[in-house]
Image 1 (cartoon, rainbow, N blue to C red):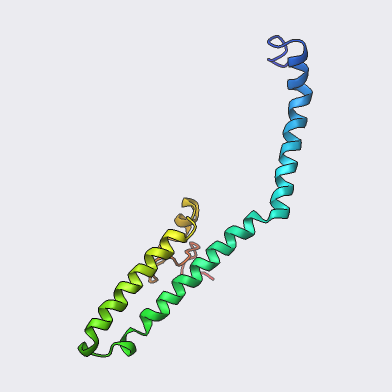
Image 2: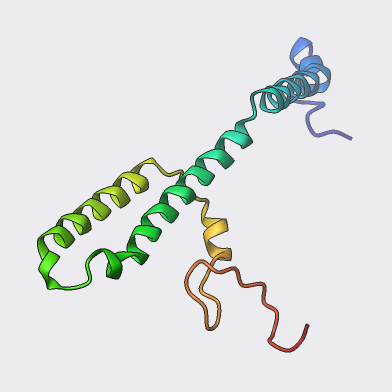
Length: 127
């Protein structure tokens, strides 16, 4: 026996039993179709890819630091470049999409590696 049988009678009960599930199914179908055609997941992936490329660009500049500024003679230019790197990182951080906490938990530091390396819980020598 359904506990709602005694609570609602008339058109409200009929709608809750037959119309509400159909309406919900229609809304879910429409939203799924919109997502398929508008590609919301693709937009998020593109935003993450663009952020990664921007971070990689700054990292390449940082790796060339010693060749760009080999000694103290270019200290003023080095200070200016460091400020530009910091400004660029701030800009990237502002414009980058936020990652879900679940994804960040999976990217904890791996043993012997840096932050952001995936850790699959496989012991060394077990594979």
